[in-house]
Image (cartoon, rainbow, N blue to C red; front, side, top):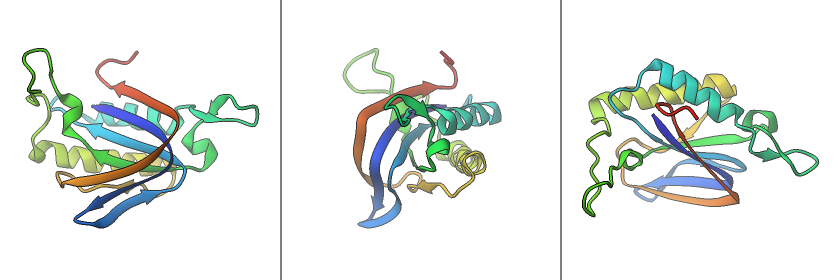
Length: 150
């Protein structure tokens, strides 16, 4: 499971012109799912997301998590995080899970994030044509892959 995490001043996602999720200060998290992902990946990634210390403390040092600050989380599914670009110029998405596998996993990561953060998670709609707006704060952008725990 892959996540691209952005610290934002605000973010929203629209489907067919209607906002499906919006947050003030917090994290915008793009999530990509592959067939090999399981509950262990969900648990590990959720813990990383809510405890990642990328918000400034009173001294201006990135020492606080979204949980510490009371921030919000907006999650958007994004199969393109599993793009393979080794050959040619057209990315291959062969590693990205098909909806029958990915949708239940996406729903599980949303529920796990809600439990770990202790509040409702905002989200896009899986598989929809989404328009995402954000104001990246910093900018701070972090890439995490549960199969490559560095």
